[in-house]
Length: 115
Image: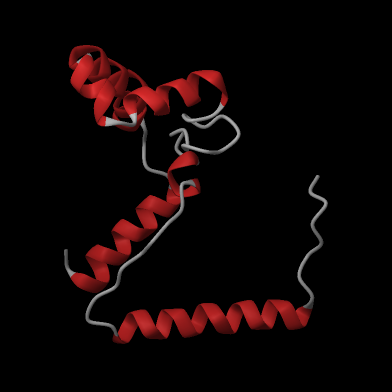
């Protein structure tokens, strides 16, 4: 059970009007850019960089960032750096499936902007 309370009727009306205003802006826009945070992909099982189980957390993350997050590590041991990149970063992305948020953005792009 969540500790959050349901929004009051005034808060709900404000949220509803904000959503409607956003929808109206999208309807009249020639282009739209959507910026999402790491949580958008985290819902598909892709680790964030700084979240609770983020790629850069803990000793492994700190050492990994210091080594693989700089040209030094890539230049010194490029094969090892690529291997770590593929295992730790690329593989989870390649294995992930889109969730409802991703699908909604894809649908918006296709239906509204014909992409």
